[in-house]
Image 1 (cartoon, rainbow, N blue to C red):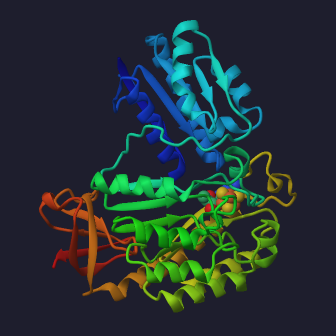
Image 2 (cartoon, rainbow, N blue to C red; image 1 turned 90 degrees about the vertical axis):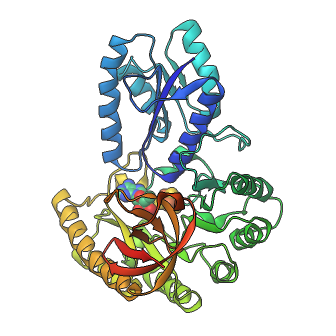
Image 3 (cartoon, helix red, strand yellow; image 1 turned 180 degrees about the vertical axis):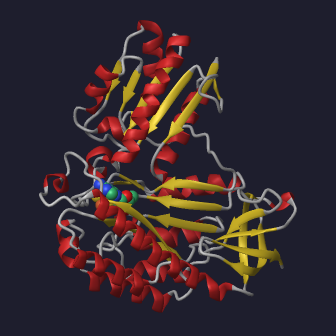
Amino acid sequence: MGLYKIKSYGCQMNERDAETLAGILCQHGYKETEEFEDADIIILHTCCVRESAENKILGKIGELKHLKEKKPELIIGVCGCMVQQPEAADKLKARAPHVDIIFGTHNLHQLPEFITQVKEFDQQITSVWSKEGEIVEDLPSMRKDKIKAYVNISYGCDNFCTYCIVPYVRGRERSRKPEAIIAEINKLKAEAFNEVMLLGQNVNSYGKDLEQKMDFADLLRKIDAETEMPRIRFMTSHPRDFNRKTVEAIAESDSVCPQIHLPIQAGSDRILKKMNRGYTREEYLELIDMIKEILPEASLTTDIIVGFPGETEEDFEFTLEAVRRAEYDNAYTFMYSKRSGTPAAEMIEQVEEQIKKDRLHKLIEVQNEISYKKNKPLLGKKVTVLVEGVSKGNPDKLAGRTSTNKIVTFAADRSLIGKFVDVEITETKTWSLEGTLF
Ligand code: 5AD
Ligand code: SF4
């Protein structure tokens, strides 16, 4: 019937949605191709969390024009967060007439209808629901990986951090029913998957909208009890809703990995308030202390934004201090990017680009030192690794991850891919570990 190419940008939510789009296309007889040139249908699955992502995607949309000229029957679809922003779909429609289908984050399941319409009427289709509908269960799916899988537990976000576009493009928070989550994980286990990453913009507020009384900690315990999945991870946590009950559930379950991604975003109380994050630096650091007390082996990661409007050198110093105190294993660091429609975009006192760059470099330097230091005690230790595949940096070696999500490379036979092995750590680096089979 034809070949499809999906290019997905942005977060894990998008990666997961792209697997659904791929599943829908396969169900309709399409097969995947790696090359844009060979495709009969191309879908760009977009992100708009920062301006850099949007610019990259607009560039790609421009490039596709030549392909469409060479092959007029090619169908081009652009979907996801970017087109969900107010007026974005109209602008794109005017600017890129070679795009056949423009559809939003709430319309993914309608892709087959759109394809049929384009084929029959040969006109540009725009379908962007401004409001989320009910969660659509049981959509087909073509998973990228055979070992690790993403499983959504909630969609959307109700937090409205003042810098963030997500609540506007992904709608209000909706929790999936626990039974649907458990059924999906059990199916994945039957298909020989060994690891699941539970996904939600704010996993800790899971269940608030459900009829049954259930919170995130209850969900973790239920998954641990009712599935045989060896490893369960989750992201993203929000400090406002993160609690002791969750850490206890992790500590007392066999499958939930001791790995917590807890975005701090900034270390200055003044900036945290302007960001509408709902906690102070001390409250945040108390959570970190509580995690270290109950789960001393846990790895901790975070997201940090530098150069939020009004951030002074002193505010930035508070961020560095918090980073030193929290001692993260790793941090995802970003320069603030103005997102139109969000409250922070309207704030005066936007920080100069060069200052943002300088602060980012400083922050990365401080964090790298901590990452290196935190890996050191692992030297000589035995760790259990789920083997994910051939190492990207060294094709003679395999690579996998520890329960704390550290990457380990080691020499071993490829037949071990997908299995758990014990590895002794022989060298520690900033980003990864080297080892030998135990
Ligand atoms: N500018 C820079 N970084 C942002 N993030 C979200 N919105 C913005 C923005 N406007 C970052 C946050 C979030 C991560 C996914 O992206 O740190 O946790
Ligand atoms: Fe954005 Fe804040 Fe929601 Fe995360 S919690 S998606 S940063 S609004």
